Image 1 (cartoon, rainbow, N blue to C red):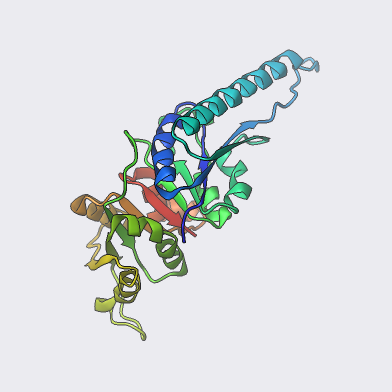
Image 2 (tube, helix red, strand yellow):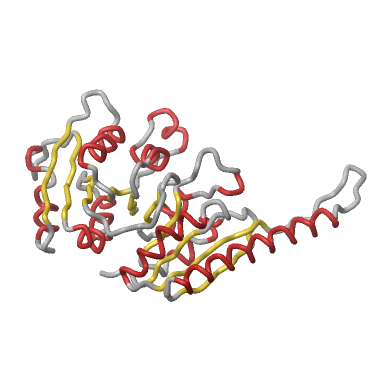
Length: 280
């Protein structure tokens, strides 16, 4: 598998330079075609308390949206041309104006999606429903931390969070081109259990062997949570190894249970310190 088509989600002018600093060198390394995508909210006619249409206000909103579209497209085209990357632009208007949601259909025909993690301090108009993109697109999503600085370079060490699930399996094999780029991979298990098929002490051994057959330097690591959340255990391991990419399956529950019980997926979406590839 190779990443020949990249979909790059651009939420606004604040995140665009950072995302392109990551995505374009990445595309150059993988000889990828890059699709830049941004969405704006459809202008909706509003009414005054007296019943009259606020046409002037709607026209002003439409003009501002068109200006943002034009500005982002200009940045995208200038950057891709300067770096010699094959590219195309897709601009949308939708009811929500959410670039991630508007990008779901395009994502389904891409090898990989790149999007920035939401910045909790950003204007709400500059955030996106990244979870919908992960859970509904059917494609691997590579998340760039909102703290990312500089230009992306080849990954050096990858941690694969492994629990034997179909989501983890999909993420591991979707990330093979990145693992080959790095060469060094650690398969991490947390609180593995004995099953009829496998002793807990051997959890991760089978996937490690499969990955090693791709000429990768693969090791396994078993951790116990000891009262910490699994998300915290994974984050701590990333810090200990200085790994520069996490690969994991994306798991979802109802929003209420996520709020009450937390969740590894949500933890990593909120507090990632390195790029994270998620697949569902």
